[in-house]
Length: 218
Ligand SMILES: CC(C)(COP(=O)(O)OP(=O)(O)OC[C@H]1O[C@@H](n2cnc3c(N)ncnc32)[C@H](O)[C@@H]1OP(=O)(O)O)[C@@H](O)C(=O)NCCC(=O)NCCS
Image (cartoon, rainbow, N blue to C red; front, side):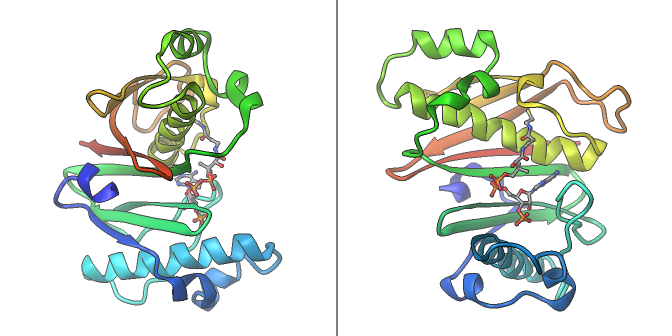
């Protein structure tokens, strides 16, 4: 489903089963030595999968280490994003140029975390959720789409500005009819290397997952 949301220059790969089981490069493994097995599996899947995408972009054998904010430190000239959820992991990347940021996010439709709505959604977003019909997505699923869209914003905003926005620092306006969303940054960082107030994204879903994407053009 991600493939249909991403423009042509962006390369995409889904992690194969062996990627979850196989240790990553030593420099990458150094960051998960004490992590629990679930975390080691998803991290390894992301690293192997990223290497597959990077090879398509002409970068072979690159060790993709995390930065201070857990952001993947892509090779110079490349931007990308990783997402994992349960047994699915995807990586999208492209050459830095027209595209200056990518955020992809995957969420399970069925996870039941009803209590997080107040932490994730602004009053305006909650009023919107309240007014929606339960078709084609239920309130809980729409809320998870907002959550996912906000994680995409984080994956684009942080690498540009080295700043972590709170979930209530951005407001999402989404449409399941058009498959589009926009995100308004309400409380940006005090100092921004790359000022960003509004981003556009795309969304879709299948029987199991919700998918959101932001590809930020220069
Ligand atoms: C970091 C976070 C986005 C990851 O959540 P998750 O449930 O593990 O979700 P995903 O699997 O989809 O994404 C994880 C991947 O995101 C990427 N990522 C994590 N932090 C990142 C950052 N600061 N910048 C860019 N990408 C980042 C990493 O590649 C990570 O996988 P890895 O650690 O194996 O490399 C989330 O947990 C978080 O901390 N969010 C708080 C900030 C936020 O989202 N604010 C909302 C702003 S409106």
